[in-house]
Length: 323
Image (tube, rainbow, N blue to C red):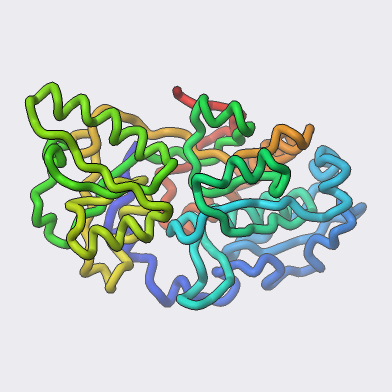
């Protein structure tokens, strides 16, 4: 896939992030009342998400489990902040925005329910769903075969990994083995941490010292380690790396190093909505709603609003993990 360019991300200005309705309180600008909580309303309603008008579809709403229709909401766990997938509208705010949040609101609007997001630590997301505290996870989570044992994934974008480095790339990280013998940060429990473990073999093959991997509960902490000089780079997904490089300190704090030469032999992986296995019919309803948003262009317009059209996929698949 083509990595999002830094110039593209420079179009995401603080003014754009502050635009009314663009930060997507789901009923903002709606021409009718939003989801009422009665589930499967007889007549369609409309909701505006990121400037895109979404109409509910009672036929798709009928696919939802009865308990969720009655509750009028899907309880969604997410790890905050992880921009641009999930983040707060502004510092000190409790209002959430981001790719995952807005896509979740759009899916919910199509189904006539609300996707209610609550913050959780990343490595506790799947256990919380398994324990019945949440119905789903939307948190830029890579669909992996091992994770499919805990939840079913409805895949919605593809994204590969990348490096976040200090402005000017002072440690000269250009190819993956340049991090051998250096300290790097990563968010614990992520697919990126697993990839770094695999990269140790590349260092060994070239007779170089191993990578010192510092894992943190949140990527914001991994970024802080980079900013403070504790590590030479932070390993995360390319979309977030580009976004952070463009926005942190007005774009003066960080750079990115992207591409296969820099990250090693890997490809873009599906990112999915992790749906509880204890809610029969929910994954099919979410898949159908997401596919309808893909088909009518709403999905693409929401991704365009974040300047990341390259991560779009044409079909909403279930459990499409590559490994």
